[in-house]
Amino acid sequence: MNFGSKGKKRMVLPSRPDPPTVEQITEDVNRAYLNDPVFTVLHKSDEDLKSSSSNSEVEVRYLQSRRYIELHERLQEEHGHLARRRKELLAAGEALEHSVMEVKRSAL
Image (cartoon, rainbow, N blue to C red; front, top):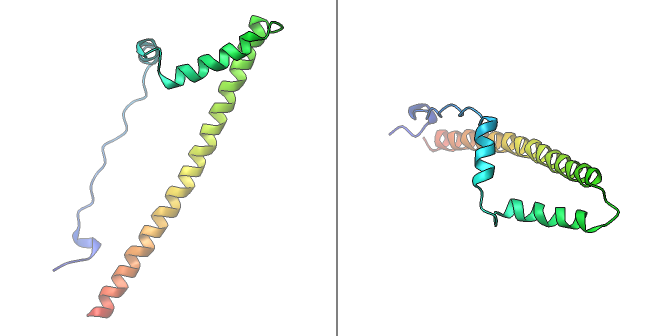
């Protein structure tokens, strides 16, 4: 029996799909349900912004834009965090595979 990783065939992952076009994104957003959690959260935040009588339309749009930018930055941070975790997990997997090979060698 061959228990080593060399006997296994590596699975080839499919390539990533092309990102959606602006038209596809717009269509997707327009098809979303009114109770979609993303839009209900944003809608509530927009209502809070508009409730203040001192806010002009420009001010509301500015604050909304700032909120989107902050969310984007948080997503970028999480992306970096996930990339680091992935590297750690890959290293742990390699170490585990090495340990398994050592155990198998010592058992022979």
